[in-house]
Image 1: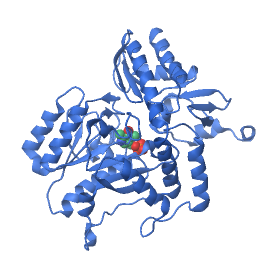
Image 2: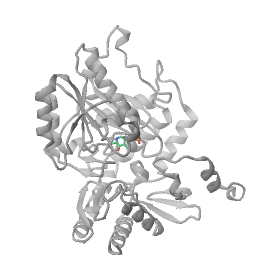
Image 3: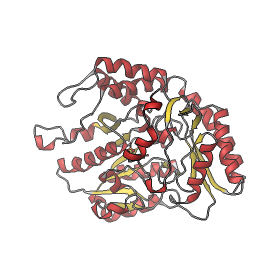
Length: 425
Ligand SMILES: *Cc1c(COP(=O)(O)O)cnc(C)c1O
């Protein structure tokens, strides 16, 4: 076994820089050797229930055989090819299959690498759309408590705060609307449109759930009203479904709750079933049309080395087939479990603001410190890990967002860990 000849922990500690990790706290990462279904297995083959889908990506389950097989087959056939001037069957099949399933009118797909790049592409498309049309619209409207990724454009449209502070003066200005959970975001958007509507290029939102901003769930009515106001003002509407896409909130896309179709839509995370990094930005034919010209300066000058990687496309096609199969029933089962658990959590001291949307349950812990740096989240994460459950609270907000194969018994384990932790406080 390699463990005898290779010290994973020592090499990691010496050479690896982990994401969202303060190495100075001295926390040791958990070595994971394999995973299957809803479980990770550590170096001693101890099972750990992955209650957060490994950062919201694992869709059906870990190591899902159908997706794994599609990846292996594609890797032996065509593993990668430049996507400018060339194309391949997995990319075009996937485009057609996705367009059939996304909200109406999103007829074009631009492939990229992850959620942040999918957002960068949407914002660039929106800004260049107006430039190509010869109009001056340059402002982007975004929501308070939004999270759209960690690259500079994505940070610019995300809420300013802890994550963005070191770079604040390098980010472009946006028009910020108030948090859509607590405040009348529609009236605020109306005021922006009345004052500077002709300068607004686009509005970007996370439909119905502000994810990294604290799993804050907002109403379909407000989402629908924002979309209608944007349409009336000629402002492009960008839906960032990077987290909510592919069934997390119940229907395939959160926009469906509000019966809206955006002009641009970003997806990533679950798109390959959680196997490979991949992103996609959807655009309407009207947006695509504004780039269509003999004039080469109207080109979308954007691309990534791995655009439309055939292996990722094959994984996404296999994942879509699973979504068409029994997935809706599984998602409904998870939601029913969550709703029953929510009634019990809501009755507990120490827990407030319990909320459920589709396969996501979230709640706030009553803690002396609020926000992302609240110590209660770290304490719960280590308490849960000792008991074989992976949770990663967003500060004082704890949530469960499981792979769709997760059973009622698995969920009971996760609910129980949260309950026991709160009771022990
Ligand atoms: C995670 C996330 C992103 C960024 O995706 P990455 O793949 O981490 O770059 C963007 N938008 C939303 C809504 C997200 O949840």
